[in-house]
Amino acid sequence: MACDTWTEKLDAYLDGELPAAETRALGEHLRGCGACAAESLSRVQLKRTVQAAGQRFTPDPAFRARVLKSIAPRKSAGWNRFWFPALAGAMALLIVGVISLNLNRDRRGEQQLVGELTDLHVATLASSNPVDVVSTDRHTVKPWFAGKIPFTFNLPELQDSPFTLVGGKVSYLHQSPGAELIFRVRQHQISVFIFQEQALGTGRVRDAAQSALSFNVRSWSHNGLRYFVIGDANAQDLDKLSELMKAAG
Image 1: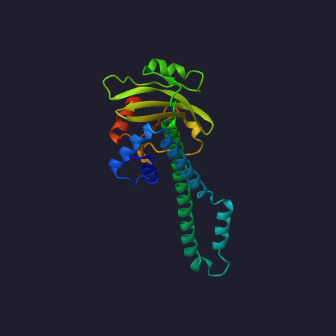
Image 2: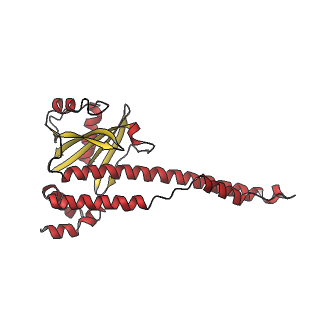
């Protein structure tokens, strides 16, 4: 299939709207076509920019003050009888609203964080040099990171597993260095990102399975480090690799 035909399907692919067969076929094409992979990365970055622009408004403390002022009761002889139920109801609505705002802010922060990591993974797929240390030996890859990142980690033994270690490189999240490890399973590449929890800022990340831009995502925390496993391999493959990483950690 010509690149022009694939390019027409990129937006549907990135939005997770393609049928499963076409998603797999286009994923295979992106791994072998630098031009289409670069175009895919460009569209992902555009989507991230548009998404961030739509989330710039965040209610400030003045908003809460205006709400409280608007519901403040006027003094009268029958204040308790007539105004207390209304005030109680308004305060309940305000509390629910604040909780909802906080939850939505946390959810947006998590989505943005996962989106940034997905961008890094797509950039790795599109790169002609995806890793800085090329080796299938964990005893070569792990020491390479010494002095380059402010923490250490363990890599699993992959013998008798379907996974192959390709190598690794230093990636940056919020200007903090971390490790990006590349694994291969069949024709799929999976990125494993490891960052210090403090590098994530105030954003909260759930220890749960997620998805972003047609990629599966797994995340968990251990000993002050946050792990992310991202790839277009099936969910079972990501679960198996996650379990191997957890056992090694």
